Length: 115
Length: 112
Image 1 (cartoon, rainbow over the protein chains, first blue to last red):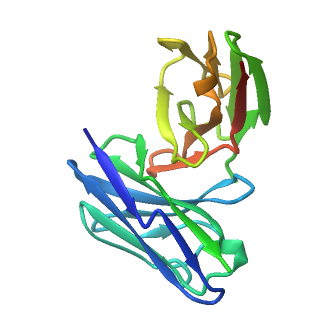
Image 2: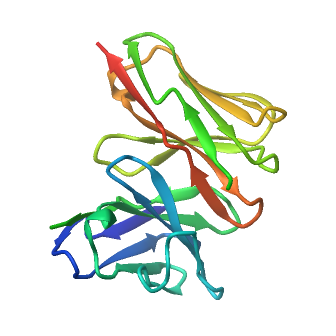
């Protein structure tokens, strides 16, 4: 079956520093990867949608300068949170789409704590 | 801006009872939905999807879709404590752009 690995599972960083998270699809080709953030208040926000060989589309309130994403091939994507502050805390999820299907399959998430 | 609204925000149901969750999209171009379940400390897992008007049943779970009202509902019969979770409704954003947006979720608690 399809598996989506996301790591690290948890990370703690000091305010103003940066951290990188990775998303790996195993057993299938991930034609697109959507990065979401689930805040401590449980709101579920789309950060950006990354499709191989296409420009990455960021949603309102999220920028490439703050959340640079790399999607070099059909099995791997990474996102960095630059200059993290308290408001960046939350669970970051990568959602992967198989082929032309629209259903998203999520990785385990990376929980970011900012001190 | 397109929104997906879920209600209620939280729900307590006795074990063995029926849980009913609601979801509506504000975008008239959206007429299909997904339901995800997220247990505490875990990532969301796709529970059911519905693309056609009417009803879809899988075990104890039934999903309804009314395209005219852009409304979907999830019903869980014979609720079990293991059904306690955050239930998220998702709809495609700006039809055919490949994005899903999620509602704020319904926190379901099943009381033994």
